[in-house]
Image (cartoon, rainbow over all chains, first blue to last red; front, side, top):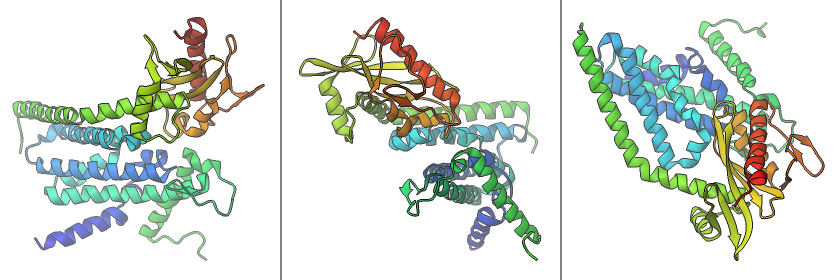
Length: 207
Length: 193
C-alpha cells in the first residue's frame, strides 16, 4: 500500500507535534508532573507507555468488529491492563534494577488517559497497523515532552543530565525544580506556547 | 451492528479467559527469573544492612552471603566470621504512608550501633517519600549509636545527626517509628537469639 507511508508520516507528525497528547490534548498530565524530575525515569516511562499504547491500539483495532459497542470501554481497559502487567512482569524478570526504580509507576501506566484516548479516538475506527503507529507515536509525543520537562528540572534541580553531573559552573540548585510544582510552571508554559502558536495569537512580548 | 446480551456475555467471558490465560502463562514463564532476582535482592539487602555490600558483583553477593551469613530461627540473620558473631540483620516492617515499609536493619555484634538499614519493599510516594530508598537518606543510618531505652529521632544530637526528607514528613516519621519499634521489640526486649 503506497498510501500507507504518507499515512504513517502524517500520523507521526500529528502525534509528535500538531496534536501532541500532552500539550494539545492535555492528556497524561498526572504522570508528566510526577516522573519528570529525572530523565531516566521519564525515558523508561515514555517507552513503556509507547509500547503499551501501540500494542493495545493494535489489538483493539484488530478486534474492533467483534467488540460489543456497549462494553467497549471495559474491553479496552482489560486489554490495556493485560499489556501493562506484561510490561511489569518483563521488567521484573529482565531489568530488575529499572523495575525497582520505577516501582509503582509501571502499574500507573494503565491510568494514563492517552492509551484509552487513542483506543477511543483512533483504534476503533482504523485498521490494526495504522492504529499501532498512531499509538506508538502518541507515546513518543508524550516521551519527548516528558524528556524536555525532565531536562529543565534535572539540570536546574540536581545539576545532572541522566544522572551525569553537568554542574560545571557551580550554580545554586533550585530545590523547587525537584518538587512536583515545578512541572506545573514548565508544562503550563509549554501548553501556552503551543496554543499561542496554533492559534497564531500574538505573544505578549511582541510589540 | 447491534449485538445481543448473550453475545456480549460470551464475548466478555471469552476475552477474560484468553487474557487471564495469557498472563498466567507469561507469569509462569517469568517466574524462575523473578524468583532468582528476588533472592539476590534479599541477599544484597542483608549484606548492605550489615555494611558488607561494597561494589560486589551478583556472584560475589551469593558467595559472601553463603559464607558469612546464617539465618536465625524466627527472624533475620546473623553475621559470623571465624565463629565470632560480628553482626545481626533484623527484619522490620510497619505502616508507612501508603502501605507497609519492609526491610532489614543491620546491628553490630555488640548491639550498640546500627550498621545500616535497607528497604526491601515500600510504596511511598515516588519522588517524595519514595526517596527513603536513596543513598543519601539510607547512609545516614550507618554507625548510628543505639542503646536500650533511647529512641532515635531526627535532628542534631550528641553523637549523631539524622535528617528527614523535606516534603515527606509522614514517611520520614514512619521510618523512625518503625526502626524504634523494631529496636525495642526485637533487639533490646527480646534480644536477637
